[in-house]
Image (cartoon, rainbow, N blue to C red; front, side):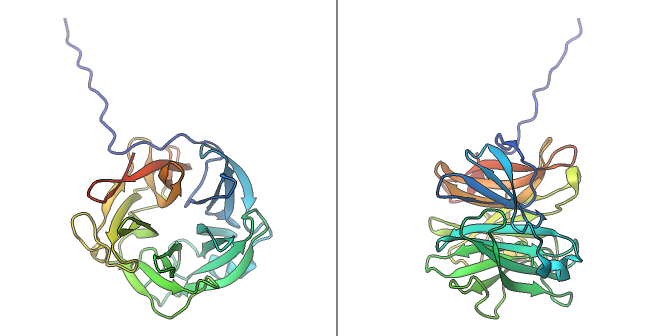
Length: 305
């Protein structure tokens, strides 16, 4: 009698994305929880795409930020209406949206700010240019992320490839740039690093970034990395003490099975704890919304569960 050996499936290195339904085709998601308990998601798309959910499971289309277009961005987009990598938050009684205008592979880019009292499609007012990069610069002004530190100071981190992730100070009364200083907070010597997101938990500011390649469908190699610092401006180091300005980063999520290239992450403090929102690619190359719970271990490092 022949002996049949059945091999158990390999254990997943990371939890699979939590259940979501409805209109979940997103790229570069950002999220805020509204006063009524619902969720508002903005993501890369024509005129900045919006989605809403009442339960963090079922999502529906909610139009776009600029349904009439955003003519002030076309210098950077080559005429395309596709705007990238928004960052959504609620401050001072209104919604703030930082967003990027560029073309793929170019650092002729810009980050703009818009505000709205409701967050709904068509209610947004453009507040102007925050920072731009030119082809002569060593950075790329895309992928904005706002953080407010313990002293109430506003900071915007951003960056993609070139010399890495940068940070500038903002004026809290306008949301626009307050000085000319550009700080370096992470980099891979020109390698693939993008999509910063900074949150304060306990004694540390945590800097989440995406390493490797986005936007290649199921061939994408994006993965989520993190470092931490006791100061919002750094220096950020990974779990092994390697500086993030020297390529450091501790992996907390990577592709596995039919989950390809997870990244462009954002941490949301929700009623049931911290939640990581991100996109990943399915086997057919579709970009989908991923959601997992996020916790901090006894050594002070984030992990998904």
